[in-house]
Length: 74
Image 1 (cartoon, one colour):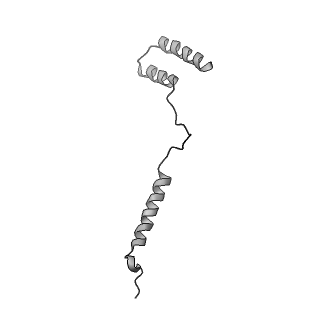
Image 2: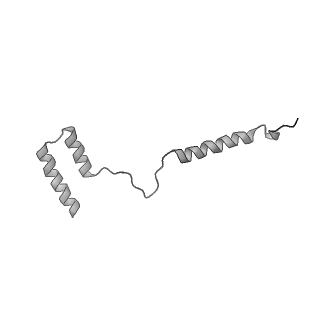
Image 3: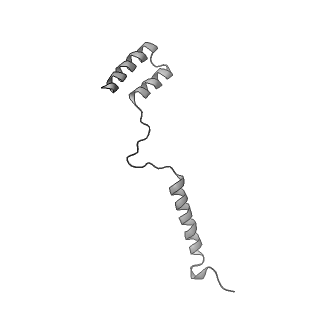
C-alpha cells in the first residue's frame, strides 16, 4: 500500500488548514477600509449624550444645540 502523505508526513494537510484559517480570519473579521470613516462622535452627539445622562438641563441643551446648529450651517 502506498503512503498518501508522501515524504513530508502530512505537512500539506497542515498547510491547507493554515490557509483555511487565514482566509477565514481575513473575511470573517471586520476591518477598516482606508478612507472609510467610522461613525464619528460629533459635538451634537456628545451634547445629546450629556442631556440624556442628566448632566445638563433642558434650557442648557436647547441653547447649546442652537449654537451648534448655527456653527454647522456656516
